Amino acid sequence: MVVDITLKKVIDNSYKITIDRLGDLRFDKKVAIVTNPTVAGLHLRYLLNTISAKELYIITVSDGEEYKNQATIDLILENLFNHRFNRGSLLIAFGGGVIGDMTGYAASIYQRGIDFIQIPTTLLSQVDASVGGKTGMNNSFGKNLVGAFHQPQAVYIDPYFLSTLPSREFGAGIAEIVKMAVTFSAEFFTWLEENDLNSATVLAEAIKKSVETKANVVSQDEKEKGLRAALNYGHTFAHVIENETNYTGFLHGEAVAVGMVMANDVSVKLGLLKEEEALRIKKLLVKYHLPVTYAIKDVESFYQAFFLDKKSSDSSITFILADGIGGVKITDEVDAKIIKDILNSYKVS
Image (tube, rainbow, N blue to C red; front, side):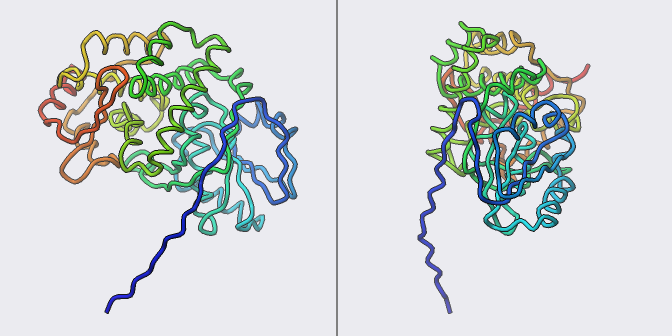
């Protein structure tokens, strides 16, 4: 006996990304702002001056990738239950990518899903993490292995927040900008080579170009069934590096910078990328003081960790590779020997 359930409802998850100074944000509902002590100390007063709500609460969680875990998610959820939030309530993610991912994930599972808004305060979150609805947390097996696709209701990108950004965080965001250009636009990459992102005007344009690039990809492939996987260029290697260093040795964007260089070694080996193109990418990363190497202690352990990547399967590893500057190739057919030879070139002697 078979009973069919026909589900044909189409849900429009479209939303707007506003790149400008924050305007008035008015909500006739319960609202909780999720943030961390660093962001709260620097910018919470600025945000509170723009917000009015029926009831407004602040949920402060520990700062850092190492706290992107179940314990922090539980803390957020407990606050929502204690304040009797309902399905009509709203969360606001106010911070970098870690805050955005965890707030979005908490919103996706609280009472089977409530709305949330992204107000990103780091360059990395403004150009990448806040857009696209990827939410989640880390566990002992790796980065972002638990999560959900849950699109925000809106994203508000205010360049004002970048005025207090530490130099390493600034560089980490630039790594994600470079990622967008390498994989999707040779013209954008050349523009990055020719301009200085330390200029506020240039940076604003780079944020706009990056957001437009990601928005275009997400609109074609919301849940990463194909094209969107290209946005993980550099991340297959980076996630292993982050996990090996317990999320304390590298900022996410720094690990991605190293991961792009490693991925480019593969591309050069396969004839997808010219050596001079790989050098151009590395020089652009170095220009913003990003790391471009990593000391691997155990090649086999590093290699086996690839199989925990969300794009990989039991028997094959999916790599996102630059196919020239401005192009991308997604493949699970790279010979293990090629990968291990490249990993050995990074091995501590």
